Length: 138
Image (tube, rainbow, N blue to C red; front, top):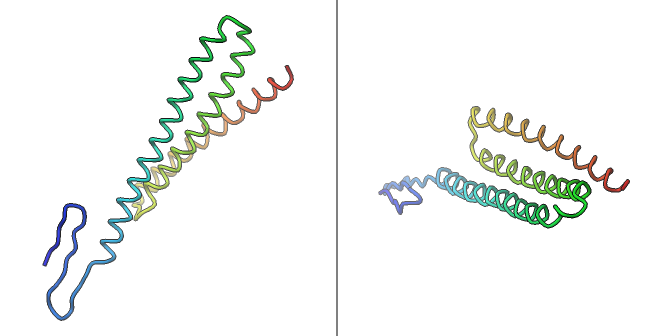
């Protein structure tokens, strides 16, 4: 007997040796949950970028008339922190996406993406520290 409700497919033999493909079903459920979690993490990252962009543009317009140089440094610092946070969420989404039964191709892609995002985050954090030091010295 084959039970298919559109989401799961469970194969059941109606003989004495009933077989339920529990491993397949649980792996499929885990994949679906990982896909949902990955989508949520990516949404959060995009939301962080969108909110920080709107906030940055608002501050830029408001502060354009006053102390542009000091305002620019503060705005860059806040935007950099938001971008670093969104990169962390995107990295988490990539890890979740390859967590369930990854292939070697998926692992290689994750390694490349992780390397690039770590590289970007390293330099972004370094620039944020420099901006914080400049802001404290003013």
